[in-house]
Amino acid sequence: MSVMVARKKVVRKWEKLPGRNTFCCDGRIMMARQKGIFYLTLFLILGTCALFFAFECRYLAVQLSPAIPVFAAVLFLFAMATLLRTSFSDPGVIPRALPDEAAFIEMEIEATNGTVPQGQRPPPRIKNFQINNQIVKLKYCYTCKIFRPPRASHCSICDNCVERFDHHCPWVGNCVGKRNYRYFYLFILSLSLLTIYIFTFNIVYVALKSLKIGFLNTLKETPGTVLEVLICFFTLWSVVGLTGFHTFLVALNQTTNEDIKGSWTGKNRVQNPYSHGNIVKNCCEVLCGPLPPSVLDRRGILQQEESTAQEESCPRGPSTQEPTAAQGPGGQAEESSAQQKDGSLPHLSAVPAPSLSNAEMPEEKQLTSGELPVPSQDAGQAEH
Amino acid sequence: MATEVHSLQELRRSASLATKVFVQRDYSDGTTCQFQTKFPPELESRIERQLFEETVKTLNGFYAEAEKIGGSSYLEGCLACATAYFIFLCMETHYEKVLKKISKYIQEQNEKIYAPRGLLLTDPLERGMRVVSSGQQGAGGMTRARGGGDTRSGCWAIGPAHLTDDP
Image (cartoon, each protein chain N blue to C red):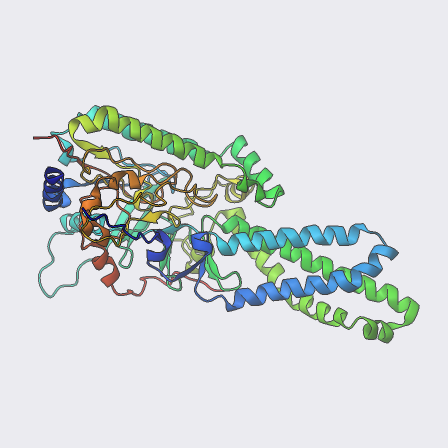
């Protein structure tokens, strides 16, 4: 009996996720496709801080206090940590419906609306829900084939539905949604503080040194100061303004998307049903509330074997799941336990979709990959 | 082996939409994760209404606990913020802990209640915590729902599960 060692290629789920995201570090990092502006952000922050630490800090630490560079370092590290968290984490992407669920929803829609006679436009797919005595409409997303939860929106840049969608920020290279909004807010807050800090101390440095050696000599000695002041000046106006705007949104428990669309403003519109009515409570919920883990099991293993129809004698490879990253769902993916005896069914391998049951339709994947990117129904993105 | 293959293929052939029931999310309380306790008519003959409703209510209770906004969640949030969120590299969030409890509960329910009735409950974590799809069982084993994760939008399904020794 010939024993074929099946060469099992370990394919993780992130490789087959639809949508226009890039993944790094084997699925641990998730970003949008265009990252150019994100690199610019990094460069500006790192460059300005490097200049500050290299030149001004040396003088100020001696002349004024060594606490100055220490505090700057703390702010810088915090800003970088929150920036990377915002950029690399899953904003709260809602996975698309697999065919059976999509078909089930279609059936439900048809049952509600009845069959539409030929030539007539089908009614828009909207479900009405009552939340806190306000009627909220749920829209159907044609790309993801789901009814979007309240406050979710489809980002056309990343081609994903995102929960509590705020906006797509090119500066951080990712969408800002439910899971990374607090990191985004803390990033712009700490960046504002850092900018103000560096700007102030540059002025102080120039003032102090000019008293000793004159203004022009100061600039000649540390030309970087001029650059820093310029960068900080322009950053101040934009980032501080943005921080103020988002503070306002947090206090009212609104998203940028809702604010731009005017969902809760106007006489005839519903009032924001998600606000607690209390600024402190709203802030606490948005910034310190419980953080849901990612629903996309990016690092889970897809059962995709390249074995032929022979009996598989090799062990199931890395079927002992590695513990998922802190951002991924806690707990282990135990789906390989479902495929223990299925080595003799090679055609299961053609189904890359995450499947516990063995009765998944083999043509599932073809259906989902065959769908064309449908332009989202609403402009689900507001760029800064 | 041949019979296993045969029954699996049979299962696949008979697998159709009718074998899956999806329980939708209930948004009446806002965006918190709750599922509708309305009893799906397709399950009328398979399971007692009360058992099903109890399962859903317990699950809803778990999710409410996970998303509870109170003193401990604020403390966790503030502590995490103070450490620039590095603490999450070593510590599990409260939410993740509750999700583990949920997956254990679902497993338990499947073993005790649903599998004997030929049904299988899947953790909403599958397919992004939207559909707890119950597929048909693979050869000789209970398909375990995956633990952890988060129930975001969507449905939760129960469907017929066939064990290989079923006639």
